[in-house]
Length: 284
Ligand SMILES: C[S@@+](CC[C@H](N)C(=O)[O-])C[C@H]1O[C@@H](n2cnc3c(N)ncnc32)[C@H](O)[C@@H]1O
Image (cartoon, rainbow, N blue to C red):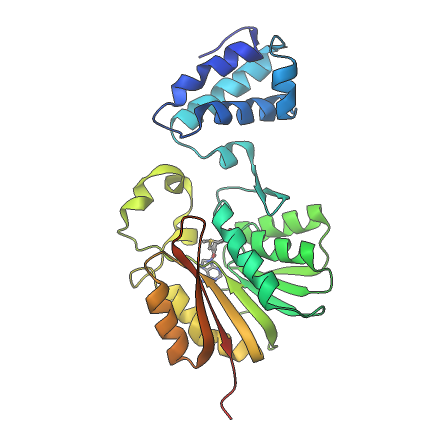
């Protein structure tokens, strides 16, 4: 590991320590270095000969060691970009994924109503709710999570971004939601089977089980949400669910069985079926 006074250029040469750990070793190092220095990436290229003081070197070494053990960059820096918002992240919940931006994009497309009411179930960092709120100041968004730390984190992000049209509360799915109707319910719930081998690989090893795993081969929370959502949707209101790439068929069947119409599945950036929506119409 680096010690004493070391320059930016010298530290960036340590990227090989992340070979086999990260797909982007050099970028990881740059991000960690920017975090330690409190500077933008351009600073690294403008001042490669700049030396770090001992405290900065120690801090960098510590972060590099943790990264070499597989800890996600976002947990090391405590932040992650989502929908052009900078969000605080911590180990109470999932690190927001770029794929979830598809859900935000779809929500913005399905709902053309300036004063819409929206519910985000399992908000985590608040990523989806805050992204939607940032695009529509007239929308009133209720964001819920059952994990106290996640509720605090989402509220922290909400305040920092000054998005007053979002309310964050603690609720086990619908349990604490006051009786009301929403135009749209969005959710990225836990949907991974507890035996899924992916849980033992990469970043997810460091993320909480409460954000990832659901019973019944990953379908239990999705099933619960689909069954409960009708009570909270206006006539013609939509439910948008992010799910696993092999769950689209099961999600469509559940939506059909619960009387949802206009059911559609969309693919993520990798071409996998990851998002299904349906609208609820009261039977005549
Ligand atoms: C896959 S993460 C999604 C987080 C965030 N919406 C996102 O897309 O980045 C699922 C979230 O659901 C929350 N969750 C799990 N069980 C819940 C429950 N019974 N009620 C409410 N939220 C729950 C977890 O704490 C976690 O924050």
